[in-house]
Image 1 (cartoon, rainbow, N blue to C red):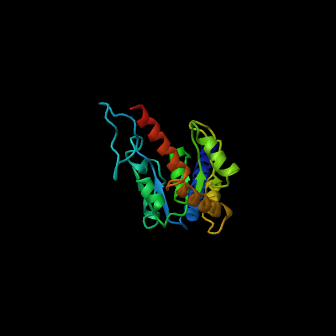
Image 2 (tube, rainbow, N blue to C red; image 1 turned 90 degrees about the vertical axis):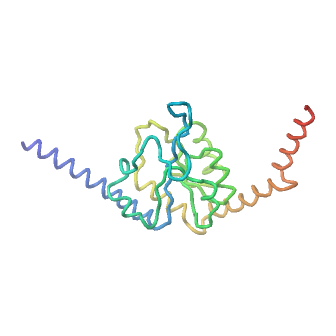
Image 3 (cartoon, rainbow, N blue to C red; image 1 turned 180 degrees about the vertical axis):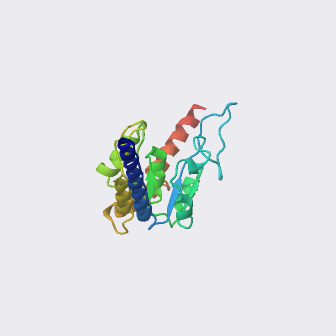
Length: 213
């Protein structure tokens, strides 16, 4: 009986410790206007058609977000955050209220974030995302590391303190990272106007294709 009581007390202590950590992270993150994003699946549905995308769509994995979020999360974050299925990422990154982007560092997301001058907190999962995160944080100084070597299926668990620290560092108003992202944003925009390298390269590609027609 003593053994059962000890195990029960140990479990309750662990649960309380986990809840305390969650509350601490929420308190840190809640200082900022955070947009939480869970992208819906793009894989084919049972009849070969894509799963629903667009405002209001939910992830196929979690039809109800309450299954994976802490109890009371929606109530505590009602005025400061939003949990949705699909998000118009470009419109969000372009909004002047957005001060940072927690990203898995896919290349499209990376380019979009740089273009709009939004610094990234890197949390790669698979494929080339680790390499992109390394380049952003270590080589270019355009991002803040949450974790650069995390992979889907890993048994390692990122601590709440590590996530909160990265987000706080990301949101520093006059940080060197934010200045570098602003500079790179200006450069990336110049590549798309007439005379810019992207503009010229695309023009040459079109000319080459047209010459073969």
